[in-house]
Amino acid sequence: MTSNSGSINPFETAQRQVDIVAKVLNLDAGTTSILKHPKRELTVNFPVRMDDGTYRVYTGYRVQYNMARGPCKGGIRYHPQVSLDEVRALAAWMTWKCAVVNLPYGGAKGGVICDPKHMSKGELERLTRRFASEISPIIGPEMDVPAPDVYTDSQTMAWIMDTYSMERGYSVPGVVTGKPLSIGGSEGRGEATGRGVMYVVREAAKDLHLDVKKATVAIQGFGNAGSVAGNLIQKELGSKIIALSDSRGGIHNPAGLDIAAVEAHKQKTGSVVNFPGSNPVGNEEILTLDCDILVPAALENQITRDNAKGVKAKIVAEAANGPTTPEADDILFANKVTVLPDILANAGGVTVSYFEWVQDLQGYFWEVHDVNTRLEKVMSASYRAVADLAQKHGVHNRTAAYVLAIGRVTEAMRVRGIYP
Ligand code: GLU
Image (cartoon, rainbow, N blue to C red):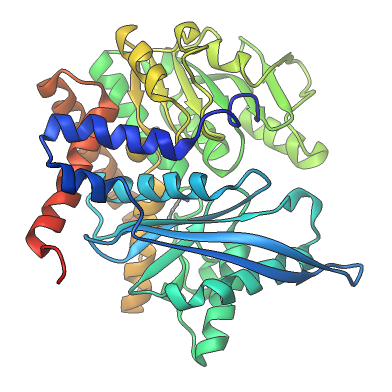
């Protein structure tokens, strides 16, 4: 999935998106400048003991972008290509994402430059615990609440929760979300991102009079977001998944792929590649396949000015963060492709993270049905608000989502005023 991701700086993209919206909202230069800069950035270099007894120094970041609306919220990713600018962009997007779905949160993001695929569980645990300790002065239930992201999961969150709690001397479940159920996790959090994607696809299809039962779907990326979205779009909407990919390559079968069987194959072989009865397809090629719904669920900068013209889908539902560049947005809009932007489409994850945090603070836990019903309400209402705003201003959904989100963040900044 590295084909396009290296060349475009995601933070420049994030800043350009703010400029576009500042014009629509008529924001003054001072406010625009605040919105284009992260509030607080922490870089840590820390040693980890490897299994062979040697030490390696890793670099990690936590960026708190804006906390006007509440405690910062956002995941931590482990990936060889993590950079400070990428984390800044992701922290900005978290700020707008929390505001689009109207959670009382600001935005943050963290990342560690590492290759988790080539580390043992013990090495990952020691890396996670030391990173948690290094960033512990700036995290906490009232300040900044991390969660899983690319190549981190509920186990990673358990280690962070334990490390933070050990250092304080008591258990602090609300310091992270996406935890295992046994230590204060929420029902429904594991599948929340993919479930949210399914809800907004369903709502957009209604507006477009697209029969989801006859729709074909291609999914780039088969991690937590992509696999759950695929599963639920197949099971609950009845659409046909015709192509899937992961970091090693993709598979295509116009007659449809059985997601459960593909999952079993990936479990066994480590990849979706070579799934029986499918044809190979590249990670770039998958974006321009003949299909009704395209779900980019991998990394940033996948749909660019170079390939946007080739996108044939009617709906692009961004399960990944930042998969489409601003130039590509304009091309898709001109070609009447409905884009469900990341800050709306994948907001199901952070929405149920919010539910988890609320449950932790109250020490009172909900049933899965309550979680999913509330999630559905948040996702459908947010979709409606964005789609109506897009219609009203004659802009694409991303700009509309930004108008909604940045409008809310600037209102919080305005009413609080600038200190001192
Ligand atoms: N990493 C997820 C995201 O990008 C979830 C963040 C959270 O739950 O705080 O939205």
